[in-house]
Image 1 (cartoon, rainbow, N blue to C red):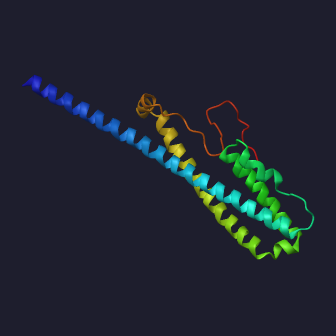
Image 2 (tube, rainbow, N blue to C red; image 1 turned 120 degrees about the vertical axis):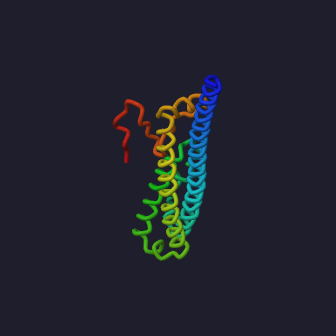
Image 3 (cartoon, one colour; image 1 turned 90 degrees about the horizontal axis):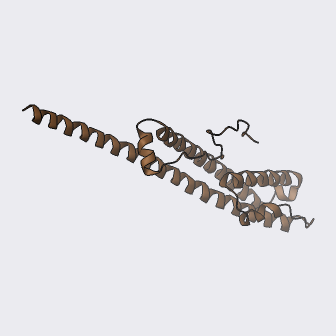
Amino acid sequence: MNLLMTGLILIIILGLLGIGYIILYNQMQYLKTKIEQAEGLIDDTLRERYDYLVRANDIVKSTLVSNKDYFKDYIALKDKKITNFEMDRKLKEAFNLLNKLKNDYEELDNNKDLKEIMKDIKSSNEKITAGCNFYNHNTTDLNTLIRKFPSNIIAKLHGFKISPFFDGKDMTDEIYNDFKL
């Protein structure tokens, strides 16, 4: 009877450990999937924003007689290997330049197509901000699980690694001055 009771307790303990293992593993997989969804949203939004820039560039070129190519460097971004964060930052610079041009030239300010693009840019700013917040939130949760016991054992077994935040900051390195504007 004592052996049967010990065996039953051992089975219950192993069953609870197995259930805990499955729950933690599934939670990490869920967060990884959410991070990938956020990356997809950010990628799509950055592509849209780039397209808005190309369309705005065409309008600026056709409206202004100066023949100056204001956005040449920004249009060339698609051929460079840069991170999404760097692309977002460069596109923000380009849109700031577009705003300045719009404010400086009345014919741009009155252009109906450019007004529509500016409205689309504002909407995409909201989307990219939401996507980045979603990405960083889920990255924080996943990184927390990867660092905590006992989920850190499961993370090591399945090759989960600490993920950087959208802005590329590595909170585990020795660089304290990685906040840049």
